[in-house]
Picture 1 (cartoon, rainbow, N blue to C red):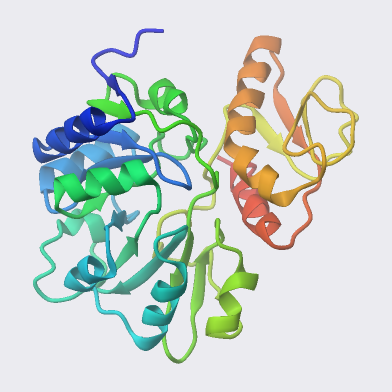
Picture 2: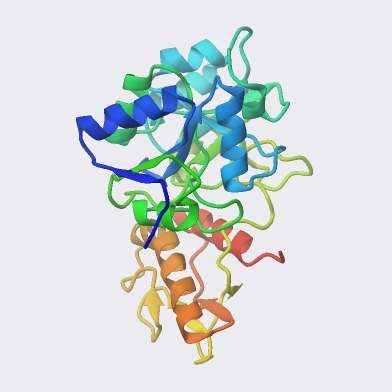
Length: 319
């Protein structure tokens, strides 16, 4: 397939150096993280951030996550409370984003925060992403590397299929290990809000924070991933299906008769890692078979199942 002028970079020092060079030139690069591939640009550049919104077709009121290599780098742009420090020590680097008060002199483009007085910050664990961050030396803004509202990418091919010709390059890091976007928290000493379910389950978080206050679809978007319709295939999605409609593309969980499965053994970690790649495959199969709908078996609403169901609910929402 022709992906226009988008280069596929190798997962080595040469690819890392080229990705950092393109970012320094104000270009956009698809970068692998442990969660999903991010569409990376210079978070201090108005032009680079504007290009992110343009490439994705993303609403300007939807803020971006800033990716950084260290807690010290995070503290240069944001204020970390005691709770935030505890969470950072326990889960960074990893699939956790925190929405924190902006620090004076942060140097970020105002497009990153969508006019809010807070910033979403994450320290990713993927070695290629960390290599690019170290080589680039400035904060990186990186929402998921897909057209806005569509299925998130967990392989370089997914990025090329969605954004090929619109961005400079993709650094090929293979399939993402977690497969779900990061969990987003707004920590405070008086109580921590859960703004997005994600790759870090609340069972791991609440021993540090106490019970989380769920605030995943507020009246005003406070963090990425809060739009009601999101992660959507082109075919319509039906949830909690018995998988009896043979005219639909059937996606199973656990032992069942289906076209595709999130996890044949009913393992939620495997299902999370497979979620977006399976939705991509189901959408391709629906297109080839001229099927109008994708039916998905029930997923237990516990642990990572909550994040899976959050994504599926948004994928099935009216558009």
